[in-house]
Length: 276
Length: 338
Ligand SMILES: Cc1cc2nc3c(=O)[nH]c(=O)nc-3n(C[C@H](O)[C@H](O)[C@H](O)COP(=O)(O)OP(=O)(O)OC[C@H]3O[C@@H](n4cnc5c(N)ncnc54)[C@H](O)[C@@H]3O)c2cc1C
Ligand code: SF4
Ligand code: SF4
Ligand code: FES
Image (cartoon, protein in one colour):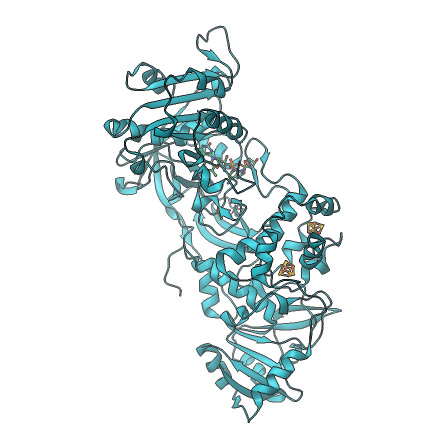
């Protein structure tokens, strides 16, 4: 018998909290057996599974500093995600991971950070935002830009409200489609950039996570602000099955996103035609 | 490498004994007009004088469908890994297919080790054979270099009344001694070399694989992909028959009792329409041309660059299988070269 244990064998986690954030997005807090830490870094993901239903790759939304548990937000789009929405607190799921690359928070000490997230892109981004805020003195300016389709699609609304009030965060938010109750910005996320004052491109690192269509537009905007490719970090979603570099589903050209991503510096993937 | 030899009669006796020993022995057999790998029940079934099998022997290590985990439905603590069985011996693998197994070995052992695959591989002894029949689509000689020897335990070479044996590994040594093969008489290695060269490929890749990878470098936007793919049915036959395709899907299936289930992996392929689809109905390779390009780049560039091994072993099965007659890597490269 080959000595290695199966790379497809999950650990067990229990749902300790769950609530709906929007009509389709559900927040979860999980605890691993024995209160173990998942041991992730900001930006990584894990494969969450229900025996009898299947597995899905989901970003870890909490900071590694949240000990003994981890958080996720899952959008109901199909078989596995729907079943996850139907589980109640106390139910168990399988967890494999953490997998993939992470936001290089250590290397960015001393720099200004601009977090640009669209919709559910806020979920993986939040892990890096929390980490940066927990280590606030290590970073320069912290700018958070968030865009949602409409006000019903906003995630972590309490945190958004808190960030908007915090003096050491520059928080900008918009919705694509307004509503009489909404007093804030209306327009796509790129309309927020002109509102940033005294932007120092050379000293700033941008994080970009959002739906596939968002990247091109945001990146063009960042270029206009003199940002270089090496200072733009993206996290890319692809279809994933194994999470361990075997099944081929996640490939962008030669790159396996589950292993070499999902977090990439833009200059590392700019020759990949299928990337953005 | 040691060179040995055995008479064909003695070889058949050896196969018969192996079958009688109740070990699972797989070999190439004739099925109507076609050839296929199958479990041998009698040594006479073994047919080493074949053109090409419909499917490669990959299926014994990466089955069409394979259970990875078993569990009680809904009970995450009940996940349990399961490991499939593989034949004790597989007889008659052509060098191209052998090189493809070497690639799978590399992929499933590199980085995270896939014990489901590697367990099965460790259990089997692989006996290869150099082709004695030509196959019009084959171009292995221009693709595989020495890769076949990274997987083979031994290779047979047809010398008329005898087989010459190239003994590659310890397992190969063991099986050669079980055959009672004898040390080669003087000049055997020359005889073997001559016999190996007898069957020439009718087509060939116009590049070495290093050159092929470089040649493809700036061909991503070539008009040929779209043009050629206009005829593609996205049927997936070209990836289904391919010995170097190892992409898979993972799915859960539940028993009729609803109490128990299995997580399975099953063959999948990048030529199928939904392969790169994500939620929100966004497809990263929506056009057949993009998928065809990905398939050829994977075979002719990405795998070569990543592992230094052939991503296509030139078996010719895809050319044979494609109803639209557009899948042949050689034809595609010739077209891109124009
Ligand atoms: C690195 C990464 C991080 C992700 N993070 C999150 C997250 O934080 N929250 C969240 O809600 N979703 C996230 N996703 C997307 C999530 O994995 C898919 O929505 C989920 O796998 C769909 O599974 P399903 O069984 O519910 O859907 P299915 O019923 O299988 O299919 C519904 C749709 O989802 C697509 N899809 C199926 N499987 C996958 C897959 N493995 N990867 C991507 N798309 C797929 C299908 O093509 C189809 O269009 C992430 C995906 C990746 C790759
Ligand atoms: S691409 Fe075609 S010729 Fe090459 S290994 Fe696969 S099936 Fe054989
Ligand atoms: S290239 Fe040929 S075999 Fe492959 S998917 Fe298209 S039609 Fe089918
Ligand atoms: S998800 Fe399987 S190779 Fe990346």
